[in-house]
Picture 1 (cartoon, rainbow, N blue to C red):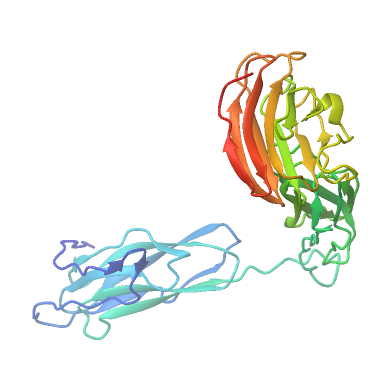
Picture 2: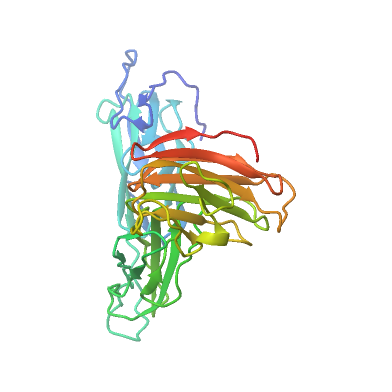
Length: 394
């Protein structure tokens, strides 16, 4: 049989950005003699049960059965367009007793699905024909091992914390706790994977060894540390990550820390007392101030004396000098590129200065001259004013 596909009228489907309207608006056809009639076979179109993830196709026959030409102006998948697809929509004029074929595909997600093929024509009885599209649900197969199908296993849940959640950097430690994690299926947690998700710049502290709980974590730079915990159960399923946050403070007095980019270049932190002189007892540095105090400030007191809490030689720092309760005066920070270990090339050194736990000054400078004493900043106590000592090795 001959099929006429000369297009006369096309109905435009209205689209908005990213979505399709849910209805087709019929168009007006010119007057005709006789009555056009549309028929679609089969109707409904049943795809049966298609396995999850697989695709199936059905052929649909569209016939013109009236005594006047049938004008198809538009066709589309309406409901169910997420899973059903009309491969090649056809529009045009079909003379009486002619037909054409359409191909519709279905992509299964394993569930029971319904849809509609919408066809817009000049059939006065069915101007907007809706053909149901059906697909059945995939039925789990019972292997015979049990009377019922076991439900899928669920992943365990990681529960984490850090105790305490705020400590004094270098001097205090905290414990990462994960022992309250659990398996929703009643199984056992067989692995606790703790990692240090983030840490302040210059920090070298690492996550302690252990299992559920990791004890004795000592932060070496002031700032925020975030621990991440992922647990795995005896079925091999892993949890979503859990995060705990530790705040390492810089103490209530004067706190100076330094770190650098490249290892193998020993950088020494120096803090000079009011009008002090380098490499004397008015200068706190590795030779006279490491984990012991110089007698600065008011006689008889110890909280106004400096201490070099961290001294690093082979790595990238950090180094730290602090005074719990600094006396009035001006304190000057230097970094010495110690000549005993040489690194050829640029080495960026960062100095952070805290007063009463608040960062009041920070800067990063390149030091690449062995033996250089680089002045960074002078801090006035108790005002907390800073004077940038920019440039010029001594």
